[in-house]
Amino acid sequence: MQDHQVIEQTILHLFEGADERDWSKVENTMADVVLLDYTSMTGGEPLHLSPRQITASWASFLPGFDKTNHKISSFAITVDHDTSVVTYTGKADHFIDDRVWTVEGTYETTLVYTGGNWRINKLKFTLSGQSGDTDLPSKATERIQTRAHS
Image (tube, rainbow, N blue to C red; front, side):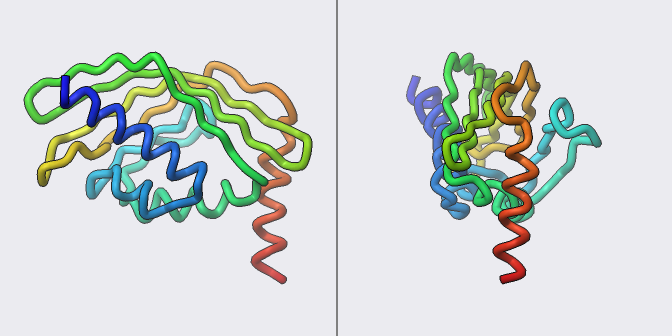
């Protein structure tokens, strides 16, 4: 049961770090290479990325919102030696002023036990739906670009 608690806490730290814009906290949850798969939402192909590449991507988008709030729940954790597969549901609210864009779906996350810690090496999100102001992602991107040029 100890492993299950540590694994769940590692995943929670990933999303807390994203909401706090604490990129080192996010990176500390990850293995050296992570298979990131958000293709159900963004298209394209899954990518093998370093933690720094992932946080650079998130840092170029998430701070365009006034705040974000990720809620994850319904963890199902399987541990087999030094590998764990975790499924859970997620809901992310993204705010600009009084507007909100909500994304919901399920995650499948794989962690490996390495160097005395559980680290994420696969993060797959499957979109089940989105609601609210679906123009907010482009507004957030505009805000980031405006800040970069001022």
